[in-house]
Length: 304
Image (cartoon, rainbow, N blue to C red; front, side, top):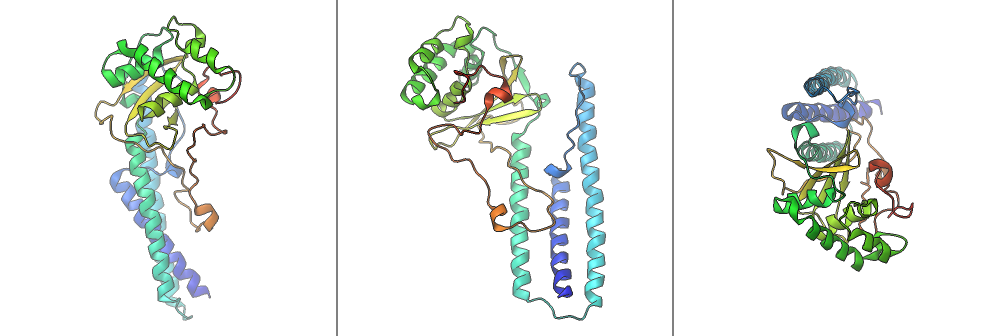
């Protein structure tokens, strides 16, 4: 029985070694190795940039040391395996285990690659400032879609008309809310809320990534649609600005980051292995609270 356990551990550690080697080769940093510390002031961009590089280098160094530890552990297991004389585990079972771990490793690598492409740091983007007159969200979308802020009123009308058709976006008096949303004079009741952001993503068929400090909020189209493009928007001080990816095709579809236990030494149960995905319906999910995360103006103190 002990020999079976040793063989299983050897396969697991071999998988970890392969995974870490591939990550280091492509400078992919798994979630478990990411350092969350951040300089508390934003007044020194040069220093902030250096701190981010230090964090990245430290993460890569930790991965290198972990790789060495795994390789040493693997050698110890091989020596232990040769010293045992118990019955060898069924080759078919070992092969199945190897294939399953290989598939999991490749799935994680693919997600990390997508994360590296989509989770761009704000410092790596160009901030395209728009006028702060109560129409800033629509100006961002107009600038992204048409190259000019001037069509913000057209974008607003498209969104409002869409919401009039699908009234499940908001609670309360739909007529009053839509009437306020047609105004462009800067009144707070005309500012885009989470309902308008979801509606814009849905009617335009695009993902909208909203960056607020370290947090990134991923808004996807509803009505069982898949975004075919992505808009990056910065939210700071109750104001939206457009973010432009200088070196990245803005129309490339980007998948939101998924949560994985990147360095789990024990296989999860079938229940835990199932990826939890949000079911897209005509209504936003109940557990989504953009008001708390973005501090947007709520609609009748309720979530959408």
